[in-house]
Length: 104
Image: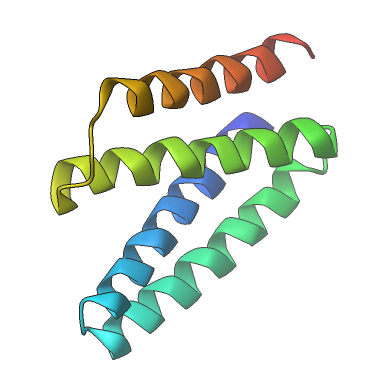
């Protein structure tokens, strides 16, 4: 169950970053609301997950999910670079997150 909370925390992290993007694109009120709610929810879910998972694993997976997810959103919706080297480094983050999960 802790892993589901951790996935929810990562999803909230991605939504929070989308809120930041909304703020930077001129939608200040809605972006701030999305950012505040999403990051609050993400930290609450992370807290619950850390009741059962080691802190280093939980936080590493949480930040990895946020990094990979926000990069994917940026590429798909905001025209961020999908340069092969960038994708390779993101692949490294995925490998690291899977390694943290498998090392438990």
